[in-house]
Length: 291
Image (cartoon, rainbow, N blue to C red):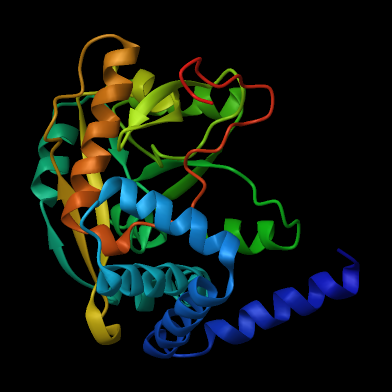
């Protein structure tokens, strides 16, 4: 992308951040439904992923899920660029925070797992306003977006750790020092950083980092920022795992996937079904059972 195009894209992003959250979510909902209706490639991936997880999915759920996918994208300028106090006021309800406080009080680190659901970008901001947190960070493909993303994610109790060796070491140090770390457990890792594991009945290349981090922490907490209707804000849920995250790395990977599935089944419309969760990273061989 040229310098001019980058400046224009950055300017458009900043202009969008000036709109009310409710407006951005409404436009995003329309855009998500339009994308699902007009793009056969997107619809094929989206519908297959959703149907595999929720076999009884009807037209209403598909429409709602497509709308939420659009909201996820259009609300980003507001979440990243509006004043932090204003963004935090959009979190109108918090449930389960006491489980984070209890684990943190033990003096050992805590791993918070936030899947690609709802307004996952707001979770670290709320957590960092209460207890400092270090979050795994992967730079976007679009170079112009990187400084905007970093500004929106870092600061006020939130530190970023790059998705490389130095970043992993930083996460480990944070846990050993009794701190909080945040990670998206359903992020598809690079070659050599994951294993094939079942996710809603299909093999998905799944990171081992989250599993390794949980092995040295006091405990694990699932995090979901529920997007409330009609632009009313967000309800942040902190949920203790239904399936204990324990055992060796493979067992922990499986347990994490089961816990992500449990969240998705409770709020299926708010998972990002268009995300290519089942893609094969370059250099990774598919399991023998997969054509």
